[in-house]
Length: 314
Ligand SMILES: [Zn+2]
Image 1: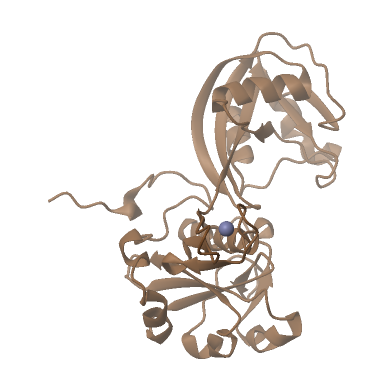
Image 2: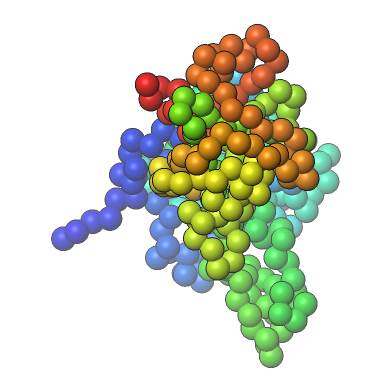
């Protein structure tokens, strides 16, 4: 018999938010009484969320490990919390996201004894692949619930079902069912001879430069989106556009598709409406970034992985 093992998907991908830390257990989601069973199960691991912040263990390195709670720690919050079954881990321990955003921050003070709320985007790059992927999954699901409280067809309230994996309209004449969404975005390392194209957006941390990115538009392939975005932002015509790898990017709801490509020429026309600057950099120039107030993206991101791959190429 063939057995599907989600824990063996892409075992070599080193991204911090990309391992398959859970078996998503699609089969069990459909059981109507599953959430009740999980709330009674002493093995259930509750992952709190609050206003799109994950819950991390306290320690010397902040935001470097998840903190899960037992049912006794979350019992007081069940009446207003959004509950989402995420699946089970390698030891078959079930994981449940419990979104506490309906509670004032002061109401969460009892949880400070166990951990601290923080932005997954700011988490330490040493976070494990399994834990990072589980926290990203919880963040994406809680965000989706928070933005879909009302039906997009008729405006009525929606209610969560399928253990938190769909929301259906309460209006019986409508009944529209909504599913969690992921927005595809492309990010591309474009090179010309021995240089790579890096740019920055106005709102980024001071001095940070990265490869260029943008959302895939309706009716467009990701490869087409790469060519369009690179031309729109930098005036560069890209060719040889090849897919490399992907990364879930739940900030708030993207899937980053990483590409490489070659520029037809080094001519640049930077569109200041889209990006603050863009320029070509050699490997030697990038190796001196620390001395010139420039910095690369954090190691957590696919952008850094694309740049690092190019730096190691020669
Ligand atoms: Zn409706």
